[in-house]
Length: 283
Ligand code: GLU
Image 1 (cartoon, helix red, strand yellow):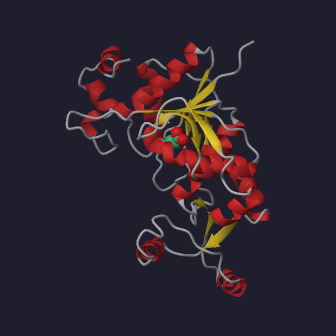
Image 2 (cartoon, protein in one colour):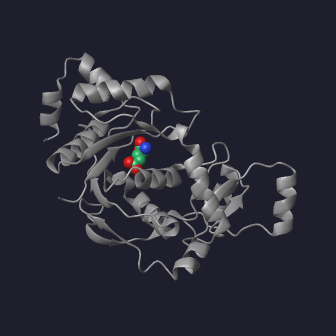
C-alpha cells in the first residue's frame, strides 16, 4: 500500500473566494486525486468578528461549482477551541510562551524604537512576575506569545529544524529547507480576544486531521518556518510543503479579497465556466 496522502484547502470565511483561492483549491484537489489521497476542506473561522456564515456558504457553493468534492464533516476551527487550548496549556507548562499585555500600538512602537536592523520582528521578555501578577489582578487582557529564546534553549538551537518543500517559496526556495522561525519573531499563539491564533490552530488541525501535504500559496512560505517550530515543540509530525506561485491579474498584482470583479461568484455571474477558468490558469 502506498503512503497516505492527505491535503487540505483551508480558507477563512472573511470574504468571497477569488481566482487565487480557486487555483490553490484546484491544485490541492488534483494532487489528492493523482495520489489516490484525500482532499479536505477546513473552515478557518477563529476570527469571530470577521468570519461570516454567508461567506462560509459561498465557499461551499464556489468549490462545488468548480467541481470539487470533499469528505464530511468539514472541520470548523470555531468548534474546536478546546483542542487549541490543550496545546497552548502544554506550551505554557513547558515555559515556551509568555503573556503579552501590549496593545498593537505598543508593539509597533517597541519595534520602531529598536536599533535599526536589530528588530524587524517583535521579540520581548516576559514581564517581571510582580508586574505580571498586578496586571492579571487588574483583569488586563493579554495574548500568549511564543518565546523564541525559550524554544531555542529547549531544542538546543534551530539547526535540526528542516522541512521538505516540493513547491517553492517566493524566492525559489525548494528542497530541504532549514527552518528559520526567527523570521516571524515571538508570534502570537493566542490572541487576547479569541484565545488562539492562526499558527497554533493550523498546526494542531493539520496534525489532528492527518494532513501529509500542505498545498497553499507562497505568501504563506514564511509561516511554514514558524509552524515547523511549533510541530517540534508539540511533538507533531511535519507535513511536506508545496507552496505555489500566486496568480496575478492583468495589472501584475496578486488577487486579493478586495478585487470584487475577480471573485468566483462575480466571474460565474459574468458567464465564466469552470473549464475556462482552469484553462486560463494553465490547469
Ligand atoms: N486560512 C489561511 C488563509 O485563508 C490559510 C491557512 C493555510 O493554508 O495554512 O489564508
